[in-house]
Image 1: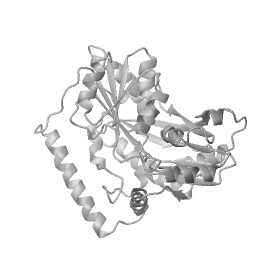
Image 2 (image 1 turned 90 degrees about the vertical axis):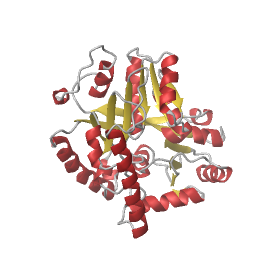
Image 3 (image 1 turned 30 degrees about the horizontal axis):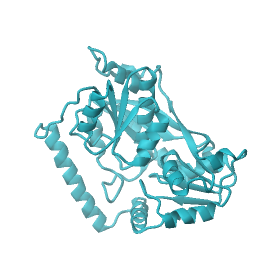
Image 4 (image 1 turned 45 degrees about the vertical axis):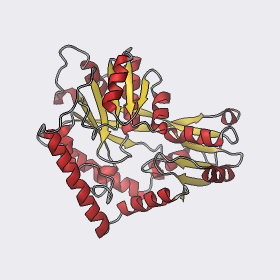
Length: 361
């Protein structure tokens, strides 16, 4: 698999490749320092030394234990779309990365999207603009803002990897932090043909399921529900792609935590993929990389993730066709709307009920 250009890309690629192996001494020392700092910070919040600030409206947080790949953004977008679709003025708060804001604007067009590091100020701004509820993307570690519903997403395959804190592994927090969540969503990414998944991906998913079963059955554990993120169709992102009757892109591009599943998905949808290009998360496309992609794709075009589509369109314009692979969140639990949305709607009631394990059926 080809990788994007640049020093930052090479460093990130090297660190991520080390996550699949036993980390070296330097990474383990740095990881221990990160774990200690995280533990102290959480202790200060748990003990009340640091206080969370209340927003003017109910706050639903969707977050994860890892730096990426747990399905936080599509789950957040789905909840936001369902709330706004129910007629509730909804705001989605993000870190402010352009690619994440683009995802939410496309996936949840009825919601207003805000971006910035100060989530409390964003929540106040959204409430002043008429929002009745805010949904916080990637908010599990953002403890300064009080949340009325804390949803934690856990990827079935990622949980099967070695549990190491940053930078030796992808974890921001350990599994003990699940106790802080009100609801855990076990996420798995669906491949249309499981035989197309790599042996490593299948093995990790098989290792992860028993972990999640044990966690869900532990005394005092939060509620567990399951969701599948399923690939959809190729969607034209520019006029050049709209003019193509039978899409057959030559290059697949992904700037996500674990791009292997995405590449397996698009190869099943189109037979023309000849190159796969991994980008650094939230990477900007410089002129050099944009030119290289244009050369690789030629007139056949590029297929990418929804998260990467706008940066490619901005960098390449209408020169070559660009498509993105749509996704759909399938909730694998009884009840309509799904439990996370029912719990969010309950926050708007004067007597919001406490989540009960019987809610999962």
